[in-house]
Amino acid sequence: MNRALEMVAVGPSALVQDLGRPGLGAAGGPGRPTARR
Amino acid sequence: MTLANRLVANDEGAAAVEVLLGGLAVRATSLLTVALAGAAAPASVDGTPVGHHAVVDLRPGQVLRLGTPPTGLRTYLAVRGGIDVAPVLGSCSTDTLSGIGPPPVRAGDVLPVGPEPTELPVIDVAPVRPPPGGTVVLRAVAGPRADFVADPASLAAITWTASSRSDRIGMRLSGGRLRRSGDEEVPSEGMVRGAIQVPPSGEPVVFLADHPVTGGYPVVATVCDAEVDRAAQVRPGQGVRFVVAPAPFQIS
Image 1 (cartoon, each protein chain N blue to C red):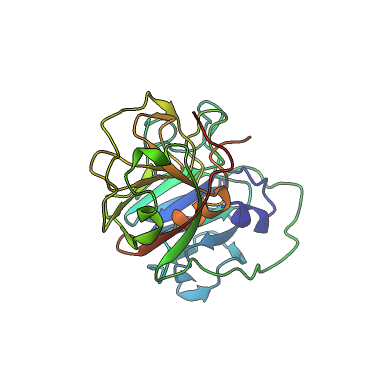
Image 2: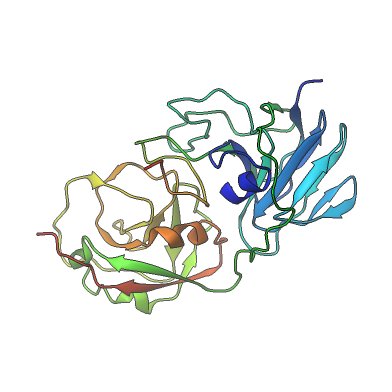
């Protein structure tokens, strides 16, 4: 079986996030600056 | 998010799942190692409570469930190997402002997990305080456009309330108004995470991770970068106060 997480239930919101887009000042999330600097 | 990734020995930049106010349930399709960080939503694996900021193994078929966190807004679920979705413009993130990146996660989705990194987790638990309840105090630096409001000191004098209209783009504040000092408008300027922008309503907006890269309303102060993560965990209805330091230089 492939390694995966199956979403059984999602509350108000769930998003895939990482450190964000270099130079775009977008995405990321609490825990890291906006973009790789 | 980075803490959750570090706990499972991922690269800090590995893609993870950001969960708003809990409610998530995920089933492992194979043996997976995960960690939770951020808002401490009560968590269980097949009904057995598991801790936050801790390494948790999921056997195939086991379900990890999150309740509603008592404080904070966003919980991070990292999985060893990272969420393996195709990057767009160098990132796997969902950008809620531009709409690029993977779509929001929905029930029934299956998120592929990447291969395990070569490094192994070095600690089982990281003792970290959960996001605070009550009024949150955020440090900020005045400017660059503090002179665009009649009484810049009001920003620090008012106890603001986080609005339910807040999102990843910005935390909207209510509970007072900052009056503009004149009718002059500024040309669009580059925006940074933590910028406190004052729209015509006078109710400030603190820009968060998905903020626009430019904006035309004056920025009267900027939340210190180290404080913005705490701002992103403020729940609607929670109080916010600013401690504003003078700007280190003036923009003419």
